[in-house]
Length: 219
Image (cartoon, rainbow, N blue to C red):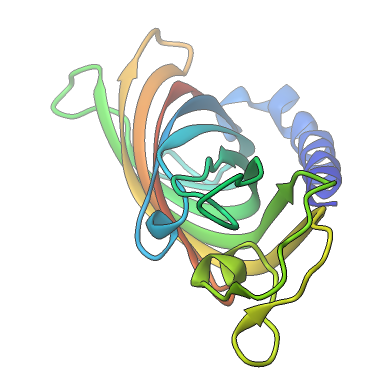
């Protein structure tokens, strides 16, 4: 669902920004990149380091201040056995986010091609989980915190219900903040950037991670 919303938001953002771009390209902001995402606790208790992808577009208020809408995907591979130590099923987690962010940037440090910026904002975070569709949880399997992370509740007496596990999504609001460094590639506004940003989603067990992104920005 969130992927469809992200696509719609991206299209609407581009449609609204294109007239401004036609009049003054310096008002248009765009970024696309990918990198590595490192989970923090409590997320790090359940998933490991993974890849991530980010893209966004927005409006430059002036040469320092911008408003951006961004979409991010993070793969979150499990770093432990999910349901039981023996004969554990295969599981996967994906995190999708749609956020609105404010960015303050300085494009030239001392007249050099190097720049720096700070960015912060928030939006909607959706964590999707899936386990082998035909896997049945054995009776009286001990309850563990990993079940809550995956979105499945434990039953009375701290035991997991016997059930066929398929897929589930958990959505929550979240915030992000970080810094980035840029290298100007030309006088047309294109820049290479490296960014590190902290993300926190307010789910029952929070999603906490720091993606490090490498990519290309325009303005």
